[in-house]
Amino acid sequence: MAVRKVAILPTLLTLGNAVCGFAAIAYASKIGQPDSNPLDDSFFLAMSGWLIVAAMIFDGLDGSVARLSKVTSNFGGELDSLCDAISFGVAPAFLLLRLGPGWDPYPLLHQALAGVATLYMLCAILRLARFNVENSPDSSAHKRFRGLPSPAAAGCIASLAILRGQLPRWTGMEQLAGAVQVWAVLGGLLVALLMVSRLSYPHVVKQLFRGRRHFNHLMQILLAVFVIVLLQELALALLFWSYALGILARYLWVHALHRHALGEPGLDELVRH
Picture 1 (cartoon, rainbow, N blue to C red):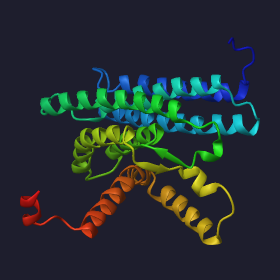
Picture 2: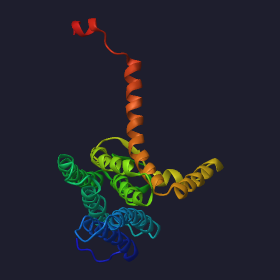
Picture 3: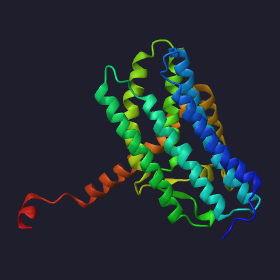
């Protein structure tokens, strides 16, 4: 069926998501050029990360505006997925290539990073396709996600880029820069696999801001905002990675407690079976 009418504002917001993702790739491609210096590379790296964060903001706004104006459509949903594939699939994967260690003195590590970046892009695309198939049209049902949401995974990569881009401005942070390079390989692989996992992740925005809550809940949000403003780049990385890895850690902990409660089979039982 032909598309006759398009919701202008939600569509422009969705396209803004794609523009930010494309701009993030463009900035990341400037890193390591012969005429660039370390400060320029740090600026390009941080800008790429911030542009992915901006894409996340556009991605959150377009759906909210469409629901508020009651103009949700299949066209908008398909367009959103295509733009997400750029901003939260291709752009973070390309940023990973610039975020990790260079060819010298770690050629094998860089080759591993190229493989991780490719896997990340594929997992993000598969995650979006699975979401489209399993997505319920009822917005009230979207309280949890199956697998790490692709915007959150992209936020993990973007926060590392922002953090590393800020490190040259701080003194005595050479070891942290090396740690970020190595974690880009390991962390990128981990969030790629978490995207296609079956772990249940909460919808943070709906749980924090929807409905009536106790006054202490408001104070916790204000405290979190204060910490973000105070620590800035470091707080952004901690928030994204805590969300991604916290659910995994909780699952492993509950699974271990469950196995301990059931009890491990003794040697005599294993022999009898």
